[in-house]
Length: 428
Image 1 (cartoon, helix red, strand yellow):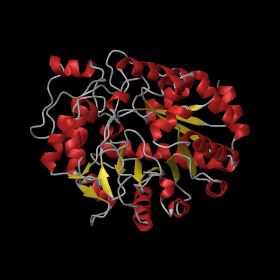
Image 2 (image 1 turned 90 degrees about the vertical axis):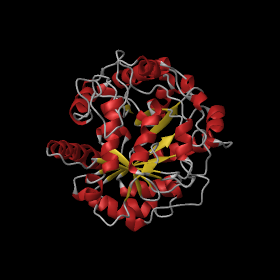
Image 3 (image 1 turned 135 degrees about the vertical axis):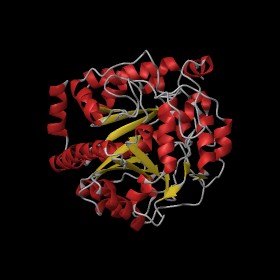
């Protein structure tokens, strides 16, 4: 597998783009995490990776989408995005995830990317705007990896994305990206309707044949105004997905990304560990894209360092999350998130202003934490990288949540509480 992957990297990628990835994302990303670890030891905080939703608009209407795609367009102005990236770079950051909506609907996306040749950007896109001209410009910039979302076969994808012809147009954009030798990835939000079609070796082999260099299998999260809880995976399906990811890493010449497990397969939450947070199109600083509450904004009259370091809301969120579960707190314990929001008077950071009602209506369900069924990494390189640069950074102790008192009176029930155990083992 290692030789096959080396051959693919050697013969299927543009060497300048590959070097940009290795230097800006790889080496500088490692340095950013090392700075993060040193800050934590000093009692300081700034996330090594930032995710920015730069526009809310999208040409699709996906099931379970939490973005305000039907609201009037809100696009972060270039100067605001530029200031965030510049200040983060001064603090050692080099990697930025660009989300939407559909990022390519931001009228000045390419301008933003061009201003920071010393940074690396992963753009989450449906691929519909990946024309020859756009792909050529991205190749010229060299600091961008398109992560193209595919949600199933032709029938399922069109159903999931709310439009006819979505799959074919996405595949066309994927081919344009690969033809121009961009380092191209494919992302899937794995749910009930696409599990059998995409969580299998034949699909991964097809992507390899197309020239895709990495894949990212997200677990569907039923949140937002149209949560579609029937699409959520069962506990058994989540285990199968985790095993599939681990096996694919060990057996297929393609990169596989995941953000919810360490090298031993023990669950973690990136927002709880503090490795990343999210900025909305309105500039609100949120714990993550699906926790749509904020107490601070990039437009506050403070530096980004002072804003992140001084945020009691984000700090309390991390403490509460790590003391409650190794999984996703908004899925497993939505009532605790609601209490935290009330404690800090955090605002609804959406255009629709219905997130509190959505949170109150949520039923607790399982997430990535599956204690006693951990599946360790088989691939040596992934295992080494995760052990050193993607772990819990001390947020949890001995592989278990910290059973300590969270901020003020927000005390989660004990891990021995049968109700909690039942919640964690339930499937929806």
